[in-house]
Image 1 (cartoon, one colour):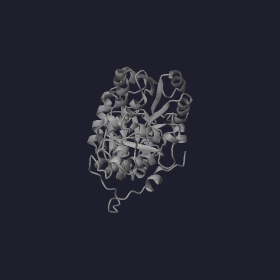
Image 2 (image 1 turned 180 degrees about the horizontal axis):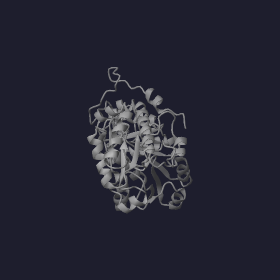
Image 3 (image 1 turned 135 degrees about the vertical axis):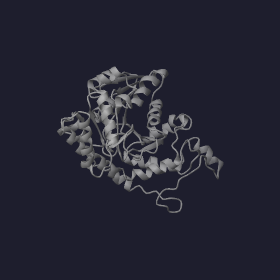
Image 4 (image 1 turned 90 degrees about the vertical axis):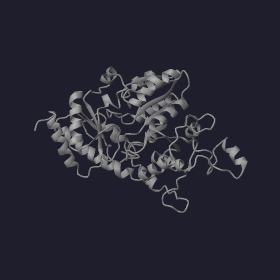
Length: 402
């Protein structure tokens, strides 16, 4: 484990409002005035600290959030975007041109898979999907056209662990970028310390934590963030995935409680995973010693936050999975809904929702069962009571005996 504590960095990040407010002022404006015409001209050439031109480029409120997220990931700089997918798309399109290639883990979020599989080839950018656990597969896929190795720290939905240090060395050896989606593991894994060059988040999930907005971010070197925001050639500037300043202010407030929430999500998930395993269920959770990535993730993670709030169980088939989820919602365990990181428990069947973009034969090849139920564990104060409710549901659908 590592002893880096991102919560300390965020705690020490102080931004005062216009009148000494403890919360930063929200800049509710699309455009900005200049006392000197030369300053406006200068901004079209390069960033000028404290000066803003147009909110598609930078907004003070968004800048506050971006700077806080850079501290979260110990990055030189960051930007915020209107969604996690826009953060991924802008980063990829900034790095890749017609004829370039990407090596991607095959176990990734369905939206990312669809973007890689269906959209990028239309622009002559080819993506090779590999088993990211097999480093020889990764090495063998690299060509002189490869620009990116793409992976999720903890994969969606199978919770596989990427060996970021070894992937980072492969990327460095070939002068390419390791891009990592860290949405499942905010604060307890810091990919930039482990070999990553670019870190993506869907802020929609754990970082915001209240399931009331859609947002994303990119954390990386100042050089790369400047490229993304370049007025003349930046993908994030020209494609325009702007996050509303009121939402940015709200996310910034929620970011300050992330360490408390992740620790509680993790504690609850660990309890449920261990309890499910004792019942004889097939459980996917990196905090279990039986998980094939347990030793690796323990080596990679920051100390004190646990193993995250995501787990999955295999109900065997789609019909049983559907019955179980319906029973759990009726029993007030949580909501049958996509997404994750909410303060209440959310559950869905990835094969028919968040991973449905992946063809059935490819889901089978990666081990994504039709009966898989992905569960984002909430902040329940009495997790024992929650387990009791789930156990009754498991009995009801015939997964365990009374």
